[in-house]
Length: 188
Image 1 (cartoon, helix red, strand yellow):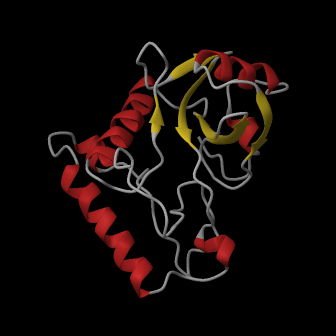
Image 2 (tube, rainbow, N blue to C red; image 1 turned 60 degrees about the vertical axis):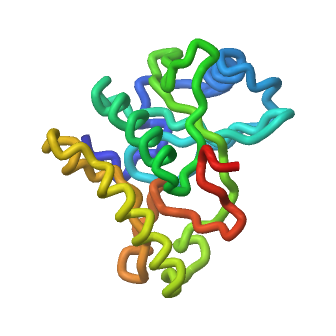
């Protein structure tokens, strides 16, 4: 299960060009024609791909081959709950059939709106006091929502973590990108 030194695409249950997968995503979700796509190289578990279409930009979170259906369902449920609770998070996009995940070419994925921004790793600095307070506020909201009846759920390590100077050397796709103009999902 160690993915630390694997390229993001090596974590998938797929080999080859991602173009057919990206085209299927755009067709399934009715996103329009692909302008371009790129794999996010930082991260340590799944494979995240930015897809730019005529209309908007999206993030396809392609789950690593070791992910179970329960892992994928828990991820989608968690994202929906944190968004409903007002935590700043990119919107989870459903298929026209109302599904929060999609499977294509042996890859299970979730699609989110892409939010441009920078991680603290990209900025080369730890968060300032206001940024830390915002992160703690969002983390406490997330913590209050956790399902206390499920030990496995409450002990998940997939919750976003704010990078500090001591952890900035190990970037991940779960790094929170703080944007002053970002609005919580569902609150426009």
